Image (cartoon, rainbow, N blue to C red; front, top):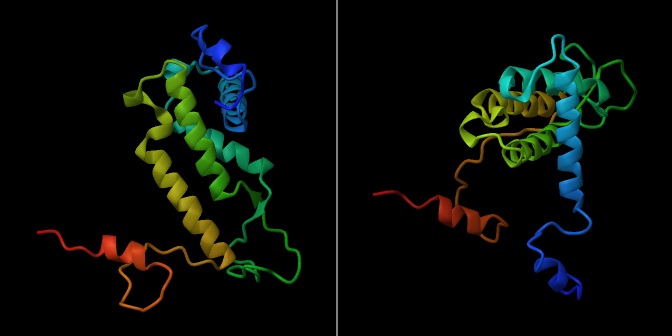
Amino acid sequence: MAEGSSSSRSSSGDNQPATPSRYESQKRRDWNTFGQYLKNQRPPVGLSQCNSNHVLEFLRYLDQFGKTKVHLQGCIFYGQPEPPAPCTCPLRQAWGSLDALIGRLRAAYEENGGSPENNPFASGAIRVYLREVKECQAKARGIPYKKKKKKTSTSGSKGDDDQSSSSMPFS
């Protein structure tokens, strides 16, 4: 609202900013990329026929463009967060990148007329896939991703605020 020109734009009924935000630009680019992926399938897949399997295939397809080294179980560096030497393990899309991508595509699907009930990006299969990627990448890099458990009482710990709200018993 600090811009002087925003008042003249708002009277036209157009709530879109003149220059889309980085998020909006990424979302549009991701949506167009996914649409192109569907068109390139043999036979081409229309958006109305798209399901979670197409989304999973798209995520696996994107792995070839990944930049995150994910060590395989047989690799001598498996489980090491900072390996001392290069290896031949594959590069993959990082879990965080995939998670953000799915969030953008989920929003774009609904913004482009898809119903929330049929949103293939919001399916349980996608959540399971993302969780498996997260766990696999964490193990391969030696980073323990564990579900948060109740902490025992420690004084001065950073997470005390979280602990107090999450440890209240239900009655």
